[in-house]
Amino acid sequence: MANWILNVMEQYGYLGIALIIAIENLFPPIPSELILTFGGFLTTYTNMTILGVIIASTIGSIGGAVILYALGRIFDIEVLQKIIDRWGRILRVKREDLDKANNWFNRYGYWTVFFCRMVPLIRSLISIPAGMAKLNFGLFLLFTTLGTLIWNTVLVSLGALLGENWEIILHYMDVYSNVTYAVLAILFIAFIWYWFFKRSRKNG
Image 1: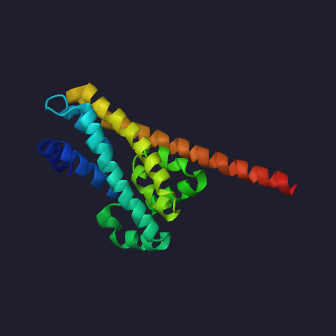
Image 2: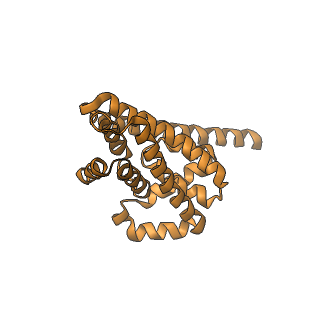
Image 3: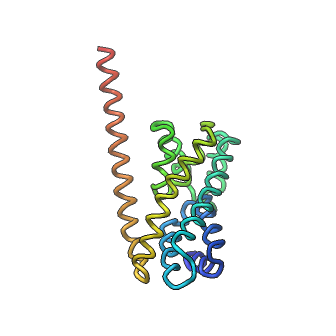
């Protein structure tokens, strides 16, 4: 699949990047890190520019996010879980991924959309609970765009900076993902501890 992604981007330029990144939002296991860093590398030997790649990838990301937001508004969590249970193997998404995104949104509010746009895998799925919560579309679009712009700008710029060594970034992104998940887990435990502590003091 990786070779197909790179070939489409190389052959169709900005349009290919926008299309592939939109698909990445709908099928999260397609790694945005691969798409964006290779897009940055393309600027080193084609007529594409860093700004152009950032704009194209951002348009594609927002398009995919809006589709998932709309699905969240149309269907409730139970319906989406049934869809994933049946088609998850093809979509390469697990029920746990949807539940995780939904739980994070419910705990941390609207800013979750912004911050989770910079967390691999969750960055796409977070649009679904935002839609289910009927988050104001203007706010959703704003937070999604800001978070996406930061993510895309950093990875595209790194890909352009490293040139032929762009694949090095993929290794560090794996480390980043693991560290991010660990930090979020710690924050969740701290939140639960604080909630129980506050409740016990109130009851006492």
